[in-house]
Length: 189
Image 1: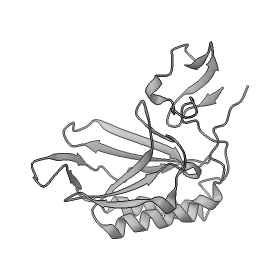
Image 2: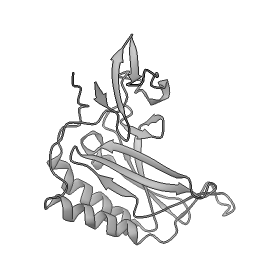
Image 3: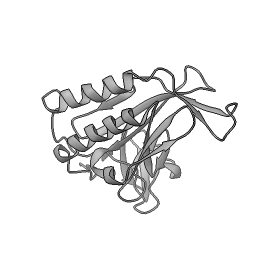
Image 4: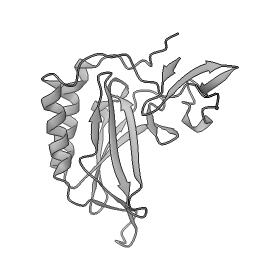
């Protein structure tokens, strides 16, 4: 048995992954390479203790300065896709980070994505300019380690207004990463 990132307990039985209520884990939530969903790693470091608590507070403060970030699909500013709700950041003792935001075309409906920090390639992160918004995109080291709703994705994204905000978040995540070196999903009996 294991716990899915941003979710409930699951177990491998009857040749597939199932929720504890017996329902099948959707195929789109399984990593194509491993056949497993993104599972929460074991507890590694308390987020209530320094330096983790202060670093998390710094990330939340940075995201809290984002007023309204709009992302455009192309050159036309009529192609509004996203609006960010802040602070939109959480982290737990197992090193799972979560980013939360709102899709501008669906006000009030929040979205969440999460991944074990150890499974992200922070050195391969990119900052993309998308018009009124910057995206800090952090790819997985291998496969699809990010849970986004009921999907497994290959990268985690933060929506911000400036490159400086993106760099601050990335540098804080790099400071946290050595404290959470184990990204392997914990399976227990």
